[in-house]
Structure formats: structure tokens, C-alpha cells
Amino acid sequence: MTFRNTLAFIITFPILAAVVIFLHIYYPMLYSKWYRFRHSLASVALKKIQGSGSRGRRLLSLVLKLAIVFLIALAFAQPYIVSEQVVYVESKQLSELRFETKPAMVVILDTSGSMAGEKIETAKKVIKDFIENLNVSIDIGFIDFDHSVKQAIAPTDDWGKVVEAVEKAQALGGTMYSYPLKVALNWLTPYREMNISVAIVFISDGLPADIKEYRELLKEFKDRGIPIYTVFIGFENEGIEEMKMIANKTGGKSFVAQTARELPVALGEALRGAAQTIQKVEVEAKIMKRVEVYTPLIGYMLIATLMLYIIHRFIVYRFSGVTF
Image 1 (cartoon, rainbow, N blue to C red):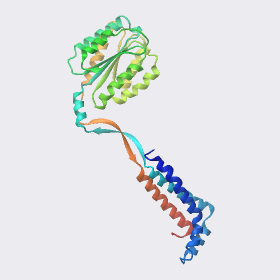
Image 2: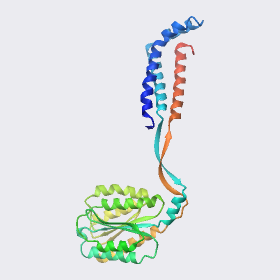
Image 3: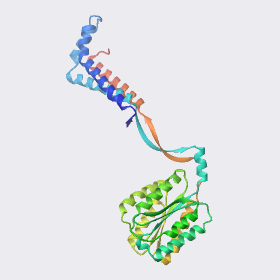
Image 4: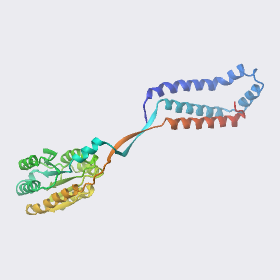
């Protein structure tokens, strides 16, 4: 619960509480002094109140009064709660942007030292051939990494720029998955907010040094609907299972090339599978978006205040037998 005007509560509650406590303590004396000679039943009521009220009952009455004052002060502070909801946004500008934006695919290539030689050269050739022979309208992005991101070309329809980056990729360094995945996630999230299909093709030949960190990102890919198609190069069962896990958790598919000679087939299937997936786009006039919804609680506070007041008056009547 959050408050729009916390200062109002800080000021209002002490003042109202002081007034209530003062009246609670001194009201019987003031009542008997000022009113008992003006009303024929005043002396009877006073005796009933004084005779029937023990310390416990007086304390209960005070607690209820302070609770009422507390709720009133909270209402002055304008409390509200914030919740996240998925809503459909009707917007001409967003709809036009959606139709102008093409599906996107990001190719992430491990260029650590272990990829040197035939593996990286084969992977680069397959990726370039795939891009150069594409006959569909999609945006292509490219990331190559070792223990950091070396090159990052955001999804674009300028495929020549992507091919140039692929040609420049060189194998050197360690292996960290979390950095390229974070970059790709930031790129593709806006596409998903406009309900545009996207996919990632992830190629690697070894386990990363940041397993815990990168695994924590996989839920975000699943929640946003970003599948990762993985290609593992090698015989190591641990690496194969790790890449399968990535694909399974994000809704993608996993492929294995035990040798560099098998890589063209495995990588080609992964690239084609990802491209086919992102082309299956259903046109929707409505765009889904997560927004924060503010729910005011003033009404609930006032209803609770009324209920407490009724309870208090009932208890007073039960203890004293009078209703005024």
C-alpha cells in the first residue's frame, strides 16, 4: 500500500488522537457539569455510564475510537495499491508501427578460443550463406562473444552490415553467456511488446563461466515469448544437455553437431527453423502491454470507519443502556 499524501496522515492522526483521548477522559466530567441540570434523564444516564463502565470497557472504547481516528487519518493520506496488469492498447500510432516492423532474428555466435579453426570458419560461412539467400522480409541481428560482447549489430534490414560483422568475427577469449543474452533480450523486448514474432539462434561449443547468472535470464525469455534455438558443437554430454535446457525453457529447439563437418546441417536447420517460426505472425489490431494500475483505497477506509463506529456505539449501548 502506498500513500499520495503521507504528510496529511502524519499531521492529522496526532491531532485527532489527542482530541479523542482528551474527550474520552474529560467528557464524563464535562457532561455532568454542563448538562445534567438541563435534561431530566442526564443524572440517570450518568449513573448508568459510571456504574457499568469498568476499566476494561473504558479501554476497549478508547481503542475503538483511536482505530476510527487512525482510519480517518489514513483516508486523508489518500492510500492506494499498485498492481501490474496486461491490457490491450488501442492506438493508431502503435498499430502503424507494428505493421511497419518486421519479425526479427538474432544470431549469437560463440567466438571464444575453443571455437578457433574449422568450427568458427564453418559457422561463419553457414550464417553468411543463410543471410545472403534469405527471400523473406525479416530483421537480422548479430552478436559474437567470448567473455564479453565483441560485436553487436541490432536487428536491421541492412543484411550487408550483418554479413560484414560475421566476416570480422575471430575466436579468442573465454565464454560468458549472460552478456550476449542480455543484449539480445533488450533488443527483442520492444518487438514482443508489439506482438511481433522474434527468435534467437545461439551457437556455442562449451559451458560458460557464468552458468548461474545466465540461467536466471531464461525465465524472462520465456515470459516474453522469445524462443532460443541452440546449436552445440562437440561430444560433451554436459554441454549438449545445457543447450537442450536453454531451448526447452524458452520454447526453442536444440541441435547438435558433434564435429565441424556436421555443423552446416545442424546450424542450417536451426536458422531455417527460427526463420519459419518468426514468419508465423497473426495480425492483431490490439496490442498487448503490461501497465501499472492504481487502485484508490479511500472508499474502503471510510467503510471500515463506519463499521467500527457502529460497533463502538453498539458496545456503548450494551455497557450503559443509553444511546446518546
